[in-house]
Image (tube, rainbow, N blue to C red; front, side, top):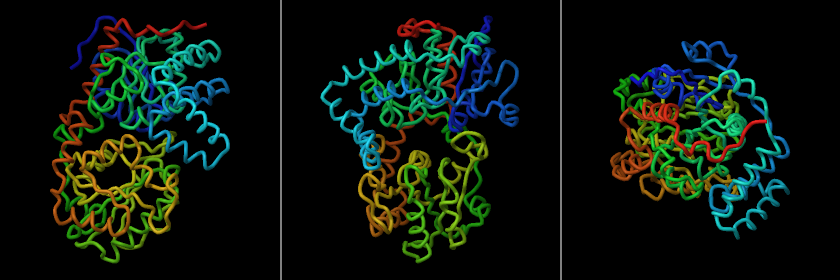
Length: 476
């Protein structure tokens, strides 16, 4: 149990997305914070949801609003500076921008600005962001959270996204103006290479793994001593002794055949792959045509931001089950319960091969030593590169996984069939590479990542480092 302090302190914890709830409230992060006896204020867009309040409020735990605010013109300009600072050093951002530049004149101008920014060294571009933060603090002040800060007088503000003008960006800005120490729990393995430079430079960072720590140092200019490597809190179920149902029980629960091999396809979001239903339809046809070396069935698991209507016409095609996990609850993404998280692990454990185009599910599968095939073609209708799923294999975070050799790439139907068949015949293929990827990207699977994050936040709360307020200004 975390050490109780005589002096009550207050921690703000922002959860702008359902995955923020998954990672921080339904793990031992919140449990550890509550055990400290300090006051926890959870800020969420779903603050008025009765089920949310019932699940998470309690003694010394309060629920307050996290406002979904639109950026002003000035704020958009400063966000643009942060984007220009990182884009020349991020292959992910360059690809995203090239895609947008084919759709709008504004994006084409931005692409030109990125080429100009490439002539500047990264250290100078980071200085541009420092000046942007200072100017924004002076010229684009926000006061939406003044009453909340005055009421609770927080000692630490914890953010869980802040990139791309998420709902907690204005809260970070308010903490900066009020000189409140801040910590950012980086939400995923792709955030540091696929977003802008971090605004208003939170005093501390908590990241999943050493790979992300290196990115925070090399790209974002963070001193290593301000970065804590925790592991992945929502992966704690993999290592804490949770009991899972058998393969037969799992498949029978889904109405599937325990005698057939299980292929699981996990989708992306509609904005990322608007034509992904064509890839799914191709897989359904391959399964029903018995194109693979063993009798197979297909489970299609939709992304938390995918839209069921894109796939509804494909149901009842035989040997295929669709899942829409989670619950719509006032977030942009669907909210996963504890039961949903347990079911995801059972899905990974009992799948024979997992197939996707771009997904963190690759790490979930590897954690269960389940082989993965990455689809790098567009099904029956090829697209040009910047609209194709081929582009994802060139994203910085996926390139680092692919380079470790634990995943097979399928650039055509024959390659997809060959890759799946290779794993159906020998599931141990590339096992060492998968395990090495898990070590590099998951840090530890000891069931204690949530505890590590919670205790690190309590360290910041009880003993704030001297550097916490080195770059803040005062409210006015």
